[in-house]
Amino acid sequence: MAANQQSVNKAWGNASQVIGKTVATTLKGVQKEVSQRAYRASNELRNASLYVLRGTRSGKVYRVPNTGKTYKASAPGEPPAVRTGVFRLSWGTHVHVERQGKRFRAVAAIESKERARGRLLGEMLENGTKNMKPRPYKQKVIDKALPKVKEIYKKPYKGG
Image (tube, rainbow, N blue to C red; front, top):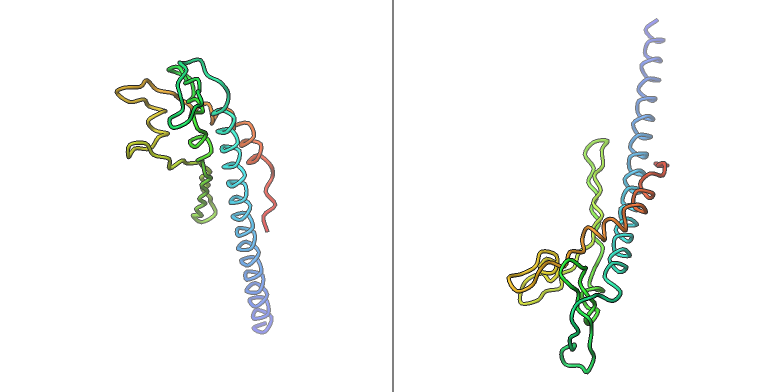
């Protein structure tokens, strides 16, 4: 009977190891998939920013500094106009995935480090300054990207 009990205990130990390795492999696969999806979601945000920050606006016409070109500025409440294209093309993707036990937290974002007079240009445009009313664009970018981002995350996970 003791030999039989040892055999059962050994089998349980082996099964436990197999299950543990399977869970670890599956979690690693899910984490990789979450990271890939976060990257795809951040690309959707960048594509949406390119879409929202294009086109003509209804503000005043100005000259582009140091060129002979003109552009139509945005009116208060409109997304920023394209003057030189630098701000519009300055957005880069940012992805961060954390794992806490069986849970994952994925952050898919875009950011622009473009500055004007030492301040982030995007924040100045979004919130306005003492000399300029806000040119909000962030929520429009989110609204444009959201359907595709939801689609990315709704698909079933395969794991490992």
